[in-house]
Amino acid sequence: MSSSGESRPSDETKRIELSVVMPCLNEADTVATCVEKAVRAMKEAGIVGEVVVADNGSTDGSQELAIEQGARIVDVPQRGYGAALMHGIEASRGKYVLMGDADDSYDFLEIPKFIDSLRQGHDLVQGCRLPRGGGKVLPGAMPFLHRWFGNPVLSWLVRLMFRIPINDIYCGMRGFTRKHYDQLDLRSPGMEFATEMIIKSGLHRDSHGTSWSQVPITLHPDGRQAHPPHLRTFRDGWRTLRLFLAFSPTWTFFRPGMVLLMVGLVGYALALPQVKVFGAALDVHTLLVASLLVLMGWQCVLLATLARIFTGREGMMPPHEKLEHVTVERGLAFGIAAGIGGVAMIGFVVWRWWQQDFGALNYPFTMRWVVPGVTLVAIGFQTAMASLMSGVLMMQRSRRLDRPVAGTRDDHPTNTAPAEETPS
Image: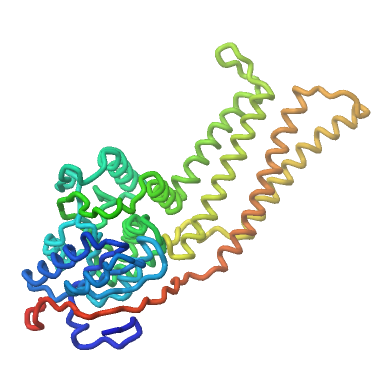
């Protein structure tokens, strides 16, 4: 039968506890096996559920193979791992959702582990393939670079930058409540979708009261023969790192900016009085380099502020309490004050030049006024323009991206347990 996300839920739909969502693009080698395992696992565990295959335009008959095993097909015209999952989850009917790839690398017979943890009240249950979290990677299941560098490093960065205790950030098999998913407003259409889910869950853990857990799973070798994995090591690794940077203005802009500012100010403290360091006299050349560092550092601080305002207003991150006191008027006042100070320093040098009938100047002396003056004028201008830009960003409203729910095809709606077996 055919249905859409706009239809009114039936009594059968209301009984569904778990929706297993699989993205699919030409997975004829494995999709039937994955659906069969998911259906069998739910039936044996007494779970009322469904299997939703979010098809990304398969041309190898994957859809029919999935339907034969009891799946419901969601046609997703927008290409991408994340796009497929977003449409599949939007079309799902369960209280809980479990996502996993259709390449037979994840064993869907392990579904009971996830549902048990979800029933205990966890909002997100992350699978862990790595031994650090109790998981297991079978020989040939994960490329060397992914296992020993990519996954451990990216997972470490998540723990460092976002304080999220996850051991396997890239594991695509995870369960979560539909309520929690709706709160996250995920937007990544590519492979970084799974990472965005983890990061946003951590960023909003206080406001949403998020509770998560990990369950160890076993990763099996990819069962596909017709084509290689869709994951591209360097492209998708960079996209994940780029996502980290986008969701962490503190690490991307603020902390590097503060380091540059501090080094620049130390340079000023040494160059203005011509301090000798290891016999080298620091003069106006050092002052110029120090000014460059100060300008770059201040630019980073401004970018951190603008990025934090934007991410807070758009709901990507919780609003920053300290930025509530940042106003366009205060920024403009600081920028104008810095600019006036810089102009005054430059004006002093012009006055000295006028006193000498515009003749030759004592450059070691005058440059100690001109360089800081020019730097202050630049800082003032940057600050004033950034303040005006912050006013533009503050006018934007938080909104949820409209995602049309794709049409579904359902010849064998999955209902793996009778209604009386539904857990209370």
